[in-house]
Image (cartoon, rainbow, N blue to C red; front, side, top):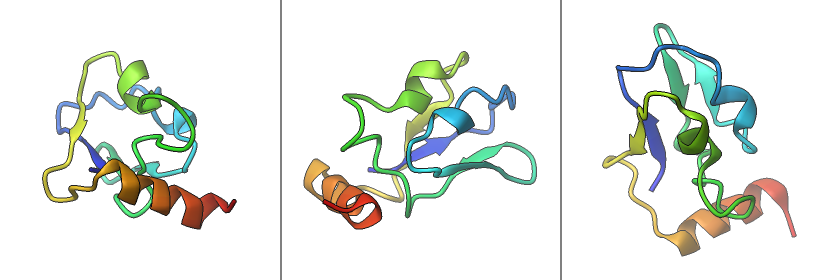
Length: 82
């Protein structure tokens, strides 16, 4: 499942540079995660880096974009090859 940044985001800039898929960008008010690019760091790390670095715990699973690990790995392969 892709991740989502909640409205409680304080725009601390911690998550954006940590995303290996460049799925995080500043939206109109807060940072947002592009569900087409988010793999929850599958293929890169053991756990999502944005969740690890968020100081207020506002990065959560996005119920509108549910994907299993196989799907996330396939998305990683499409974006990064091999």
